[in-house]
Length: 478
Ligand SMILES: *[C@@H]1O[C@H](CO)[C@@H](O)[C@H](O)[C@H]1NC(C)=O
Ligand SMILES: *[C@@H]1O[C@H](CO)[C@@H](O)[C@H](O)[C@H]1NC(C)=O
Ligand SMILES: [Fe+2]
Image (cartoon, rainbow, N blue to C red; front, side):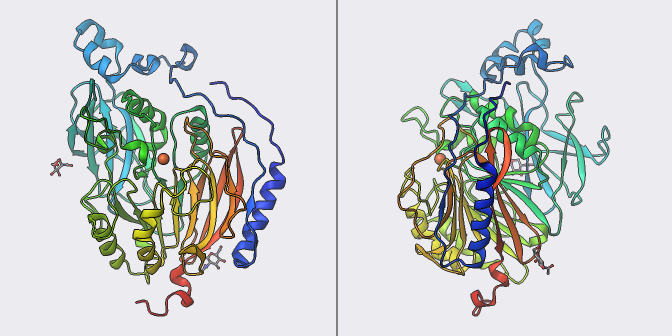
C-alpha cells in the first residue's frame, strides 16, 4: 500500500509546547490556559480494499479469499461446489483474543466451513499439550449469512508468558499471544473509532511497534454500517494485533446497526463477533454492552461502560455500576479507569452534548469512587481535560481524555468551541492513539501519539497520579 509522505510541520516545536503545557498542568492545574494545537492535518484517506496484489503473496500461502476479499456469504455458497473448494480459505480467520478473569483468555475466530470450536495451545511453538472446546454461533443480517463464529476460553494461563495456539485443529496457521503481567507495571494502548482506512492501517502499525499488554477500544470498530462483509475485512485487518494481545472493546454508535422492520435487534454483528467477559469477574454485568475487569492482580480496575444502552437511574447498567464500584477496595486497587463512547467532556463542535445524559446519570458515582481517568471516543480528534467534576476543575475527579482518532472513513473533527474552556488542557484534530503505562501504585504515564504523516510522534504526555494515593481525596474512604 503506497503511503503519502507528507511533510511534518512544526512537529518538534509543538511536541515541546504540549509537553511543557502538560508538565505545567500537573503542577499548576488551576492557573493554566488550555492549548489548541495549530497542527494542520492532511485530508482523509481511502477505505482499505484489502485486495492484495500478487507481490504481497510472496510465500504463495495467502488464500484466495483474502486475495480477492470475497464476502463470506459468497464463499459459503461457492464452497458447496467441490472442485472450487481448494481455492478457498478454509483456515481460521479473523482471530482475536480477550481476557476472561485474571488467568484465562477467550479466543474467537471464524471459518467459512464447519469446524470444531477447539483451541489447542502450549508454550512451545508447534506443541499443543492443552486444548479447550467452546461454542459456535452464526448470525444473518438481511441477505448476509456469517461464517461460523467460534469461541473457546483457555486457561488457567501463566502471566507474562507467550502461548502458541491453533484454532479448529487447523495446522496451517499458528498464532501466539503474550499473557498480561500479574503485577505492575502494566501497559495499555487506548484508541477509539478505528474503522478500516489507510489511516487505520498506519495507526495499527504504530500500535504494533509499541510494547503493550492490553488494547482498550472505546467503541466504533469496523464502520461496517450495515454492510456485513466489512466486519469480516475489519476482522482480517486487526487480526495480526488482536490475535497477539487481548483487545477489550465497548460499543459505539456504529455498532448498533438497526434496520426498521428488517433488522430490529441492535448490536447483532457486534455481539456475535466481539464477545466480551460480561459474565466473568468479581461483578458480572450479565449484559454484553457493559462489563468490568481487573488487571495486574487487581491493581487496575477497568470499567467498560455502554453509551448506547440504558444508563439512566434505575437501569440495569446503573445498578451494576453501583455494585461494581462498591466492590472495589482502593487500598489494593491503585487505579480505576473507565471507557465510554460519547465523551462526557468535549469542546469540539462535533457531537456536542451527546454524552451529557450519561454524564448526568453516572458522573457522581465515578467521582465518589475516585475514578482516576475516563477515556472516550466518538469525536474524531484528541482532547485532554483537567480533573473535572460538574464542569469545574476538582483535584479528586477523573482526568477526561477523548481519543476518537484511530483513523476511520469519516475524517477528523476539526471545529472547536471558541474560546477553549479553562478545563480543556490540550485539543488537536489529528489521528493517533494513546498509551497508558501504569508504572506503580501511585503513577501512570499517559502519552498520546499523533499519527504524524505515518510516523508516531508523542504530542501530549502527562503523569496521572492515583487518587487512592491522595489522602486529601480519601478522608472518608475505607
Ligand atoms: C457454550 O454456550 C453455552 C450457552 O450459552 C454456555 O452455557 C457454555 O458455557 C458455553 N461453553 C463454553 C465452553 O464457552
Ligand atoms: C512511582 O513512579 C513515579 C514515577 O516514575 C516515581 O516518581 C515514584 O517514586 C514511584 N513510586 C514508588 C513507590 O516507587
Ligand atoms: Fe461514534
